[in-house]
Length: 181
Image (cartoon, rainbow, N blue to C red):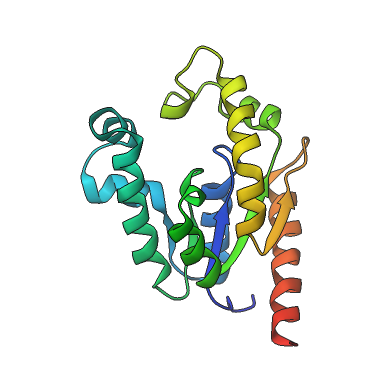
């Protein structure tokens, strides 16, 4: 396996597969994997739902910014961010300048099918979760695209090994093109 050239950062809406793919790439590249949401939980000793309940989204976003700044200073790592990490301009700058950022793009309908029964998504604990996902998609898709170096479209019918293989090829092509600049 090739060596990872810098940090690899996965962004996208909840349910896009950032954590699953991140763990696979960490094994392939033999480097540390971090999930910013899991790191926040570990540092605080409570769940994201509890942080949202006690501190609101603003409190959570402050914790998220500190974790992202800390993690992106490590090298080389694979990082999966929370879906809203790109909302902060400071986070976007850290992510974009400290690694290769890949936007795992999927439609709200695909994402909803993947996470509709997951009760650990505070932003989706609403009457119409699909509608909420569509709103988040409309708000965040342009920001994800602006932050990312690469966009990878998750196909509706997919298998994890197939996605991993295609994404790996995309990463290698990008790294080779960066080396030849």
